[in-house]
Length: 208
Image 1: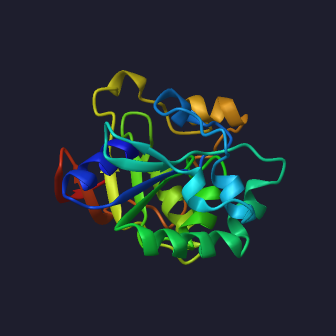
Image 2: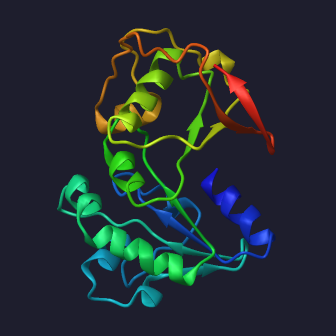
């Protein structure tokens, strides 16, 4: 989804940088070649010019900063002062910077990264995400004074994968991170919630 969005923005004549911030899974390798000079973690050390770490993909007319494994915890990496400094450099060089993050409920990375971002786009597959889980995601962001700007509905054709509420694992990512989630409910339920949503290319409001 992030690649498609980056391509769409580039098609509007914008300069776009796509950043892989899921440094545990590194799924971008299936779409882009690795950069032998390093990636996001190297960029945060400041020892290598950012321009040397970027890949220009002529298929999508975008630049890509690949993810990179690190022995440091991701919480330390994205909570350090170097990350917002890097974001400022990206803002100066590009019209739009898109940061692809891991799932919100499995690891805290998105909440740390969101502190340096202008807007948060939340991708939700309703066939495998319960209303309770969506409410928990929004509370996680709210706990650090962040709000979701746009809700993107994805994977609409996977109703057969519908999970039941109550301690369900969060798909492949939960297995990868060895995490199981709680579907605890509270008075802060998202029933009747209205937030901006993007589906099938049209902005609209969705009642979850």
